[in-house]
Image (cartoon, rainbow, N blue to C red; front, side):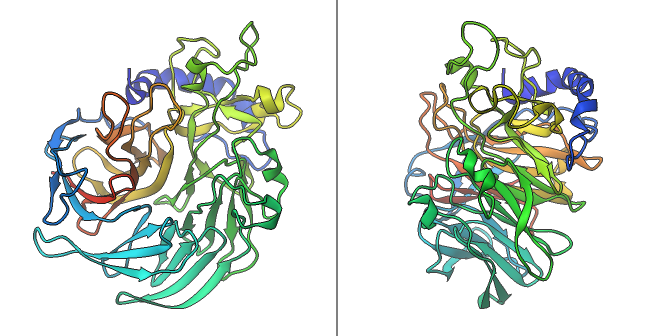
Length: 448
């Protein structure tokens, strides 16, 4: 049974269990009570096979052979541009697509062509340190390097007036870290009030010292409107690479959670790292952030089990509570997991969500409408591997509904992959533009 189907079938039971623990969840200082899950707008359409079409000059490997993806009926997928190491995306005010490339240290500009002509491509800015996150506020472009966030004035394909709006961010060059930093890439988003939000990944899988660092790591930092010192907005966020602002102004993060979690329940297997348990635990949170919210890492883990600890438990990813991490918080003294607000939505363990964006009114074609788009990079250590995809979370009544698969088929039956989506953003023409850092491509996905 797929993640999406499990979530849809188990939704009502998940709400019942979440309600049972809501009295303690809502008492946490700085925690936001779980929002009501929106009513379903109906099941997502069954996906159908579509052949990936390559524009002129884009047909080199892996597109030197026919590639098939699963997409909503009538949708088309085109290799729109070839951009090696393509990561996060942002549209400029004058309708050019920017692509960050942390491996190369630059940001590439793609200018749409006429008809079936591929976009013109050039380097917009180079010589940066692992540039990753991109965000616009009017004519100001924000670029998140691994050690700082920069702002630039943007005008007609040119940048000027570089300023550092958040400096001294931790990365592998930070003296106290001795060259070790597992999640140095940063993402950036701009709130409706002009505040700047920056994701700061953890230095490792369970590096608890990150919670006491200055600036705090495994967190989301906030720079106030107009500038000023960055402060911790949310903590316990292991690697919140997905970072975006919803239509109402709320800040959301999609998190890469920890690996190799020990089985936490009493019995002969307690404390063991069990493949069947690690495969589905803990979930990858998709959470709405408020000042002071704590997503628990590394002391508490969001749990998908409707029958906690049971090997064949049904799984749900909506309004999920937290359980203690046996390795770091066995007695609960580090953090009271029952006081953490349940996670609004989530994805299967080791999904590795990266880019996060919102498709706003009128949203995607057909029954989809407004919602969040997440690039699911796929697992590196799950057995069998979790497949890459582009996911959609419908926006209804001020919150997000359950995960729906929008685009998949990048993984072969043997677990090998020819593509790995990173981010998906809606373009000015209503189509989706999807970056893929394995195939070195940007796809145009058009609905009907």
